[in-house]
Length: 164
Image (cartoon, rainbow, N blue to C red; front, side, top):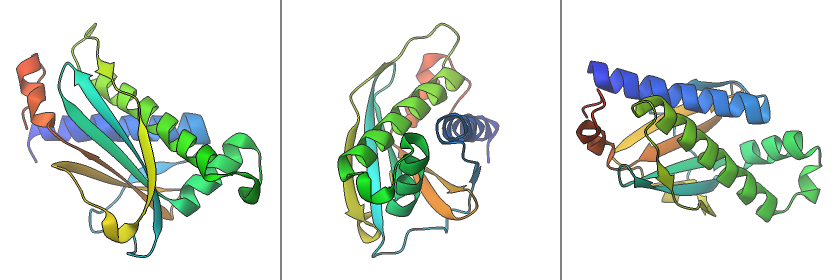
């Protein structure tokens, strides 16, 4: 792994672990990329476009079991009382927060960025398609979550030390 890729991965790991620790009081650690959802498993997903200073898309995929547990913790509610909308709102907030933290880590100081609005959905594990760059994590030692991104190679033109 090149040094810039190591820094990029470290920035994503920090953004994910900080976001999940502060929002859901959950430990999240990097996992082996071979860890994939079961084909029949329900996954919630959230997609966020980065408009400036690069054009990219980052997606977060989480098993339904994990997002339900997080929603119960955050909203102090029972799983049956939390609808699909509350879970989609939660994953949208998670992706928005972690992408903001990630960009804050990798961009030069005082460099602003512009994000789109998160889009969310629910799908089966068999439908999962990864982009150019992806990261796999294990939350609380059991559930796998996946982040995937496009076009991060554009970072090199911003004066960062990330060359992909």
